[in-house]
Image 1 (cartoon, rainbow, N blue to C red):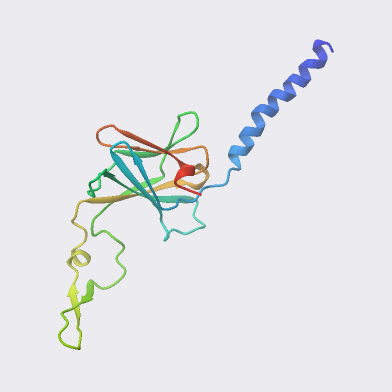
Image 2: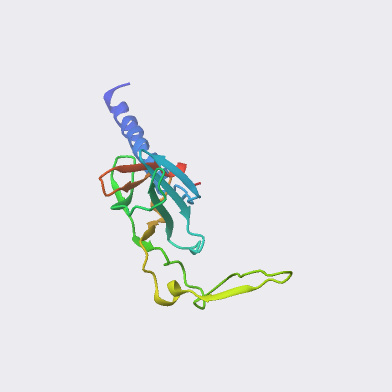
Length: 177
């Protein structure tokens, strides 16, 4: 074969090499976060899916909580983003850091708990939940992070940057299905 015959074949082959991976990346099925605990160095990363999120949404919400190993007190991350295979950053669409007591307010500011039991009868205690009445005033508890559904795919990593510049990198396949 001469140069004139090989050139079109080579061009067609190279075009396929570029086009096929690009097509696969564009049609990759988004992953769904699952409850998972990952240890990375001195940190423990807890990840859960937001079950209250609309499944038809264009975004996927991940709820994350980071603690030190052996300590239950959450630590607020400096940054949370996705990283593609080339090491490029894919920023979150939205991030909301929540405080203790900032849980969804679904009703009256009342709490119901078992009361003092005497003899054969029992009682129920009803009290005023000041956290619901006056709002959250606690310390940082967790972060809700929204990513484009099309970005939350296999081959990417969730990256959490901590205040001491430690970086937690977790493949999405290890925290999502």
